[in-house]
Image: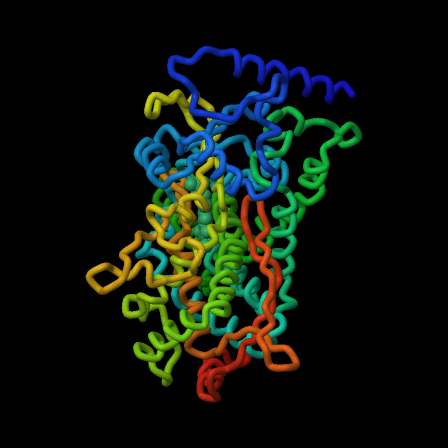
Length: 514
Ligand code: HEM
């Protein structure tokens, strides 16, 4: 009871002081606020991106302001304003809101949830260097291997394609992050990955739990705890610990052995640097704990995201037979039928690149992004943005901007074909991977993973809608989940090998891997 009263008084004080405060410039336009609650009741729980598009129209402003329990929040609704604020003035906007709930769960050493500061700089630099366009070419064999295994599994168990895609996405980041291999569907690493993803997904949207606004609540004894999400975070922290500890212990064992046969991985590279520094008597800024956390970031930031994006690509290959045929014809022309596609073919298969870009534009995975937070007061076009403002970016609104994208609801990779080649020359949408100094460090890796999965499917597999008893295609309603990340619900697809030869190529490559 005491805790409830404390929270109530603090909210009251914060809302009152932030709304009565005089600023040197007006705040951005906002809906009318309520006396005690500010704009809490104006923030939609479902399909927030659509509601924010409406607010932007209603207040005729690409920035809209909200006061949430005394915290300032803005939503950026166009690419232009996101570039001006988050890219051009990125130094001011590189902090994150408090993600206390995720810290309680065990993600405290994960870059995505880390506030600005020395540790952020250390992790950001390690991850950014580890996943540049050049650095990721080392991981091509892993991506090709997992994509070929994944497609063969899909062909063998078409009804469980969702499971095969999840395994593909998790296996890629576990191998690249930690150097551990998933050997079968029953592999303990799969269980660890499933549990960690489950625990995280059920933690809700980062930065929205009560404990995120009132960090002291994290210390409340469980007997007095009234927050379901805090209870969940405490109860499931073992799953996140397992993900940090078990694969890391395996690779550390490899790394200390004299004739290490460890696979190339992000963790291994950092451990190697650690050892070299020790041998040379140089300081190690990244501790073992940091290396462990940064490697786990690769998993949590890269597994569900890659899985969901690949699923949306497959959905569109099924829904758009013309796109499917055109993409397949391009693979046939460049790769032929004597071998499987590889990531080296990418420069010659631009239509597949456009298809992957169109996948992330058509349904941006994080429709209003992961919030940044400002480190100091700022002014944009005479609008005041106070220090500590949470900044969301409405990537969905950007993807539907009619000034940039013709018929934005239509899935049309050709929109990116340059004008001089007869296309529309529309720009790729950058928002799905974020902005400024927090832009996704894994974007090149993620696009390559989705690309090789799509190219391998096109080369070996025919994809179509399921048919009813009369041979008519069964249309399926698709419902995208809302929230931090948007996934299509379950849908059925028919996958068939394109030819005996294509199947043999896959089988020969995969061998007896389970
Ligand atoms: C299609 C797949 C992916 C999508 C759509 C995606 C999207 C995003 C988005 C929207 C952000 C927030 C950016 C911002 O706040 O401005 C982000 C951050 C991040 N992503 Fe990705 N991501 C994907 C895959 C990956 C992969 C494979 C990795 C593995 C290295 C990765 C690592 C990260 C990390 C570490 C951050 C945190 C960056 C920071 O806070 O400084 N992501 N990602």
